[in-house]
Amino acid sequence: MKLKKIAAMLLCLLTFSASMAGCANENDENPPKQDEPEIQYGEDDVAKLAVYTKESSEGYSSYIAESVHMAVSFDGKTYEPLFYDYGMLFSECEFSDLDGIISTGILDPQIYLDGDEYVIYAKEYSREKIDLGDYGTEIKLNDTGKYVVWRTSDFLEFTMPEVADSAPGEGTGVACTTDVDGAVNPVEIEIPALLAADAVEYYAHIEFDHVEYPEEITVSSEEDLDDLYATVYYTDGSTHDKKIILDTSKIDFSKPGEYTVEGTIFRRSFPFPVESRPWGDPNIILYEGRYYFIGTDDQNGNNEFEVRVADSPEELFDADVERSIILSHTTDLWQSTYWAPEFHLINDKLYIFCALTESGWNPQAYVLELKEGGNPLERDDWEIPRRCMLPDFRYAGDNPRGDGKGGISIDMTYFEVGGKSYVAWSYRTYAGTDSGSMILLAEVDPEHPYQITTEPILLTRPRFGWENVDITDNNEGPNAIVTEDKVYLSYSAGSAGGDTYAVGMLIADIGDDLMDPDSWTKSQTPWLASNFVEGQYGPGHNSFFVDEYGDTYIAYHGHTSLTDGARVDGIRRVHFSADGSPVLDMTAEQDLPTEEQTVTITVIVE
Image 1 (cartoon, helix red, strand yellow):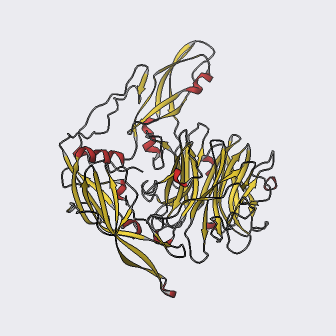
Image 2 (cartoon, one colour):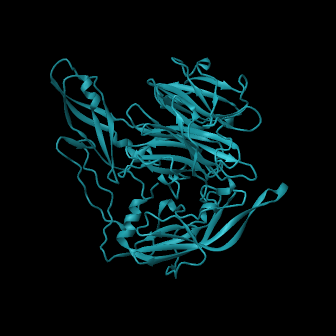
Image 3 (tube, one colour):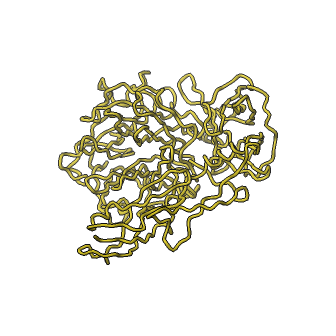
């Protein structure tokens, strides 16, 4: 979730040589890699930072536009928007007496310096949904008479929004004119240029910088090449090791010799979409040496689960891929909402977590178990789906919050941390009013993963405008990445069928009590949204998988344009930044440009 680079006119060019003993940067015949231009400012230099809201448009909902946006200028004329010119600070919703969501937004943001902190505040208003009967609905804006306040010292981290009855101080922002398209009522303040430069760098896309690999390697057999890797360096200082595949056809490993051969640095690259057929909620797993795919197929009018298998994730989308229907409304009890299936390997057993409905519309969480020695493509090798149960044997959608209400339970996922097993799922009740979908978390018995063993806790509800956008009020589709020190639980928010769909993130430290809601930090902005990757709209309901090289990938659905509502799937590698956090919007070319993949290496056979 980083932003474009600052205009070259503001930068000065430095030269960097990435050569080192025994290593090559690109090919030997190519010149050394040039660093990206680097901003150079002194402690006394100043820049301008503007805050504003945006005009709403067909591709930018008012729920997102009416939040605080920011841009910086180093010359007072050219402004560089931060964070893709997407909203950075959102007010939080209110809740009705019946626990329904009342969305809020802001107008006329202002800014001033208070000691070492910058205070940003704006007028708050609420959005009231008016039912027009046959004519649909409209949104009425109501001035709450209150203000929403945020604080920051660096424009990288902000306090959560606080509501005040009056303006917190005298804003010193000066009305200005920016060259940012659609900016509404911008005001600006002087800030240190070094602070502005840090913000530009922080919100910039993390991209390829240079690559290093051995110019020469000594081996005694072809197997010694299995550990041949290149190290790719990125603009934030992070690295990633990538497998080098050499053309060994002209090497005789049976006798000593020296050979200069070409090879390729391996980089998976998937088109968007991966296939034209519309799918939702894509999920992939590497199981017993082969890749399996499953997803939601309801846009084709199908109420069934199709499983595919291939030797690589790329081949899963070939027209002649091996596939099979393992559950269908035509032959089984469950008649609709064959939603969000996920493969999970638990104690060496393969399971599918999913949502099914017996009749009508009432999606609930179920788990299918593959029989011992079973084939995932064989329908009869799967046990009958078991509905997920709470500790006292209530169903997962039956009063999970202890408020006497029941609802739907969907999008259940599984992960393990510190020897404990957890499930997270999306729950929504319509008792009295629509609560909006929310993410619940509980521990589960890994021997019987449909049996929840603790009372659920509430992790998140759609509090921000990018989550409760256009009255869709979604927090759904959780999926986890567990690293050495953190748990990253992604989730989807916004309009599940539209361009406002986006991916947010919940983060907890390994070792903390995950069943304590205070252990989790929620992102104030999405980590993936429309056009964060150019030409991809409404990305959401993602899952993660790990390939044979140990690399993590994100699979998700989205749209190819603002006017095409068909959900189609995308896949790309998840990069891990210098601070260890997952990067969800790095394209294959930002990961490793195609022209950098070819290497030339001297192989010495002993």
